[in-house]
Length: 158
Image 1 (cartoon, one colour):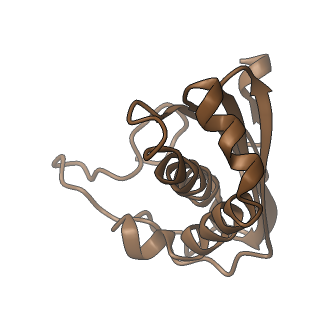
Image 2: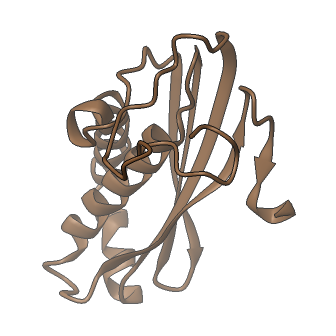
């Protein structure tokens, strides 16, 4: 099963399997994932006094992207060409996390972008928990992917 709309990580008997990418062409691929860290305004303001927190969270996201295949068993290990993690204010008590992953390979980098985004968000939430135990990561979502046989897809156009 490899047609769009079909589950690709399941064989004909319903068993989990790694997708065979042997016959696929190497193409430039890109994926963008986003999430939101939500906490009290006071907690988010407290990050201003911790200048190492956001760079540390970005680095955690980059490291997570590089380790995605170790965390998600059916993912192919990819030689990621670039991973960019950004954390920006999004409103009162909110920080937007965006991760963009790129690779030239035979399979996409969607899971790497999602993993980077989620781990960066969790790292920020971890820093906020002592000030606000209700700090959380919400809406971890794939927003864009391009490259490969299925072409380009964007959530804002879907």
